[in-house]
Image 1 (cartoon, rainbow, N blue to C red):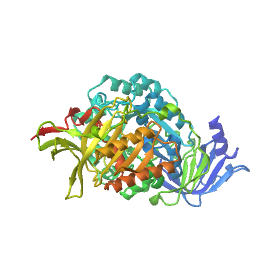
Image 2 (image 1 turned 90 degrees about the horizontal axis):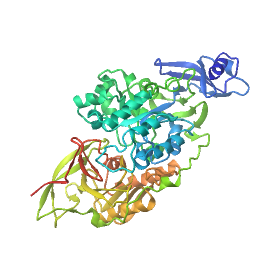
Image 3 (image 1 turned 180 degrees about the vertical axis):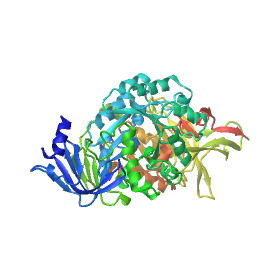
Image 4 (image 1 turned 45 degrees about the horizontal axis):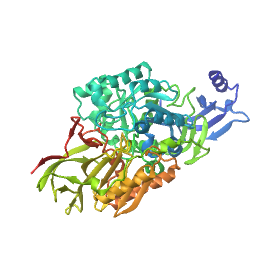
Length: 597
């Protein structure tokens, strides 16, 4: 039995498989830094942590000299979507594990919106093959907003109950249908009830800025965490109501700095707080980092390194009921240990996961498994017909010179949008993207959502402000949270049609067209969301898309991810789906043209 093996090694009767000597123990369970510490490992687990593990060293024991470096528990990402990295689970792990991530809590609701429970099963099966810990949450809201969008698939309460029995499933994914929870919707509460009955964790998603009765109703529904806060008041309210505030720092959503003052200024207990990434694209993962990047950022915002490490290890493990397994360096736990030279500039020099040295100095020490995605997973972009420039024309009835339009306004580095009401000109009965001479950029551009699941040829149109395009260009994406229809933005209808048709040809991804030429492209054939190419290849392709945005005049940080959320009709204030323009504060459809003059 495992416990007998660990006792034998701890007491010196049996040699360890691995001993790490002479490190500084980052003891997150007590908040101490303990020098001159050794760790003995057997069967992938920690058997002994103390001053001297020489009694556990045998002829076949691997010995690592930490040479005074810090011994840190492996980092855990408490909430994230693999699909946002544009790579498979295996390639995501390839990118992040050498940087110190040894555990991830994955909500695959992106692929679920394309393929349903079959897509979730693909992710669960691939996750089980990894050298680090990858737990999967059952997507709770597929579609995310029933009646307001047309996804490729749906997941029922019976599906959720079934998936909760699968090995590797840790809980229910973010409960995005917060209006449904508040309204006591039968389907949503059936899923909540099934998760509680299974003794698993319920993920939250409450993006509404109101902290009144709706918020209290959502908390009463049972959500145990939430990553959608953007203000200190959001973090404080969630913590007080028994939820774990998850402060996210991904490629585009930068919500740590605005919420961390709940700890640094308001003095809340940090042991209720968790760090996560939510969405990180391949270029961020390959070039900037993952949870190590989040730690460096949180420390720069004034948190002590010990507190930050707790928020990315023990706090997360306890939240998911896994502190017997992971999240701290202590006997019986998996031997997930990082060797770090400087806690203030957090970078893993060596990564040990499940008792094996998997990476040193950012380089892998072993081969990763190959997961064969089936052919059906690579055939998901079905438009039904070729798209033309005419499809993107916005006509206005009558002889009008101006109209008041409802326009989506993006907020850089945040997921919410603004509901703008702009007076815009009409030329020859049409609305066009508007170039501002004063700003040398388009004030607003055209936006379209095209059904890519059912080959219906259905297209809805809107306007969006904030991308700063200055060229004749378009960008198309099959990454369009959460139902992942084909999304197109652009200043020119012909470029928009070219971009959309290109993705139908390649099977999905993101593409930038300027003056009729493709200047940036990432190809994502798996569900139109992921590539099984090496993560560095995908990162370079993703970087070409970002370069394409810049060449079109856009100076936003991560504009491809900002774009991908334009159709997410569960985050205020204004969004578009394949069914039309949605006022998310009221959950009603509204017209693009509000009034005419």
